[in-house]
View (cartoon, rainbow, N blue to C red):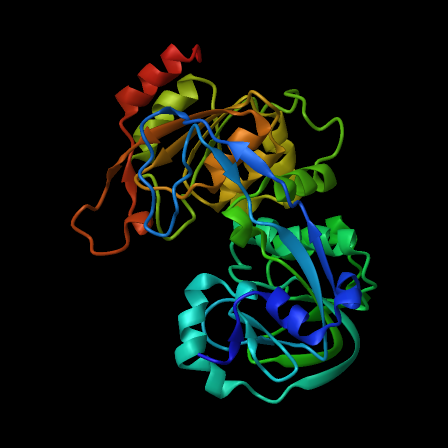
Length: 366
């Protein structure tokens, strides 16, 4: 297809004099690397979209960068969730700014349906991306881009965000200090062309979960003095009882064990972001099924024990555990509905309570 640039830098190089490149393209975190170690417990079974980390080998992350596109535009398709496309002045798509699962749709269908753009007379800094209703992707891949905009030094008139319809979205935007009058909400179907479009790269595309994003969010959102166990949340279990999928089917039986061990059951959707930060930063032991709520482990203290329950899992939370020196343990569970044709990651799970009891005993959790 001729209507794309695989990397924004391709367009920059083609349309900018060599001596002016530094004014429109800036790179950051160019030498980030890590050697991942295998968590304790059961071997991970990765979901099919994960490129598994190679434990014991040095992994180098892709560079992060910010690009300035004169007369560029940003469009949110009215299909799917957060299908955001960044376009050059002649409507060629910047492939590296798109969530990879949304590219095929653009290539086959969406390109022919781009509506005319509304003009914006000023500079727009783009934060909006895919998965913005998912707490993990919102923190890491939407708000994480704000850090790159800060580093770039480009003057921003307004920040392009998705529709702020969820309480955690508005709360975290306020926590970052972005004022209401500097926000442009990109609603489905909206296409905006700016005098200058500032495009930070996508943290997810640099390696699913990258350390600099975790460090930025931790340093920005975690308040000093919050990490005490005096609030009674030393041992917590994160329940997905309010979710429509990936629930712990035998949770009542599981809670009989955990209650005896002094665990409190937490339903995260009932809490503010600040409350979640306070709870995770004070906990010493956290047990949770795989889910976006585990994003909060980025606020844990080093050495916090994490026991992740899973049938299959992505790798972002294991990586956070590595970055922060958490005591990470994986506990493989069986499918509660094995005959279902739904995707593996959607299925409910059954916890082997006896096995978990032994793990807690071995880990000194009486």
